[in-house]
Length: 318
Image 1 (spheres, rainbow, N blue to C red):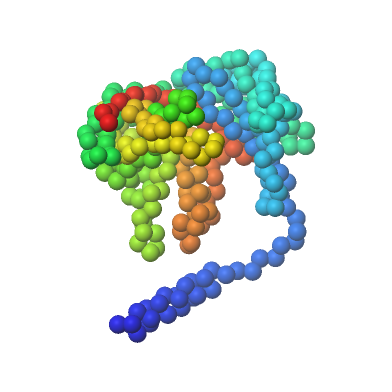
Image 2: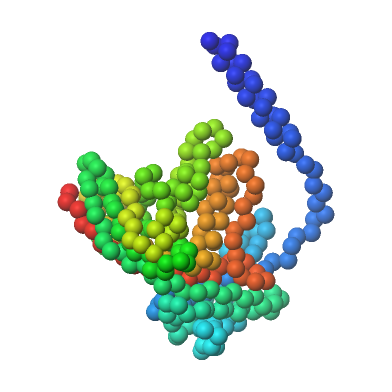
């Protein structure tokens, strides 16, 4: 048995060598690098502050993270030019950004034009979606530390493919102050979430990866209807540690906030491509093609997306 096991390992090593060798290609590099591009990032929520971040692309070897406070940013809502956007947080430890006194509403089309000397002008456009409501959350105890949750929603645009993201947050105490912490949930029993990435994407060794890290899904299973998402949430204790490393007492959250975010197509494509990019960059699939991150910024990089958030709060007994 030991000899057979050793033979299997040798065969697997030979297979790896053959596969890696067959994928090898020499590339001549002349030392030139692509010119940097403007990068624009903004998500527009109805009736909320519009904030735009402007930076640039960088290549491997650069520190990166440079943000610009001297760009020209113009905002259009339904093709109507809005008052100038103002720079905030410039010269502080925070990234500078551009904010507008105007707000968009559900159904509006939003367009940005951004320019900076030496980079030219880039543009992006999106629509602010109408939000699907959370009708309620039904819960069933799955054990001492788990909760089975059925998040009921209503797709409000029949005949049009809609896109969503589900977030779960737990109310906790942090440093003696109330706060929210993100909770990873189990979606193995929910076909809408599982189907988004081919049922979980087993890798070539047969290991199942939890690929849907942003909890995105479409309305293919419930177009124009009510639907209940079936997820599992861990309710184990959350202990808050202060600056000195000492426990601040048992600050377990008994209440959860469920956020259903309706996404514009551009926001959905961005999050889906970002999921695949992060998975392949972390070595989740050695044989996967490099995944470019989706961008709808013409002439540059980044994302202008629309979103619309509905929430529901549920408290459980200890």
